[in-house]
Image 1 (cartoon, rainbow, N blue to C red):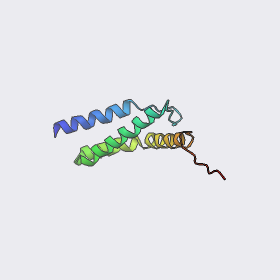
Image 2: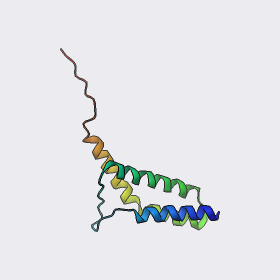
Image 3: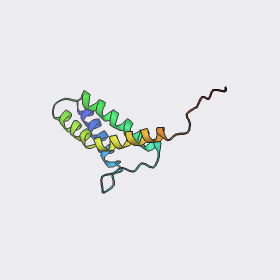
Image 4: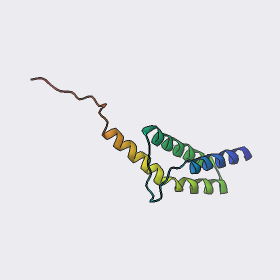
Length: 95
């Protein structure tokens, strides 16, 4: 139990410390890898919160709630990046 608390606290602390939040509340991602890392960390924390119990669970979901805006911004950035990507293959039919 102590180890799980320690791991959850460490994960929450790392996510909060590594959050690139600007003063006006917008999030600036330097590249797709950074946005993917935010999404992965959020999902890992969400899974950890699901496994926790009692006060640990409450504090975990509180930390997760604080990351919602960053997670949403990362998802939006990735969606916009995918929409503007030219890597899609277009099929044309000759007449």
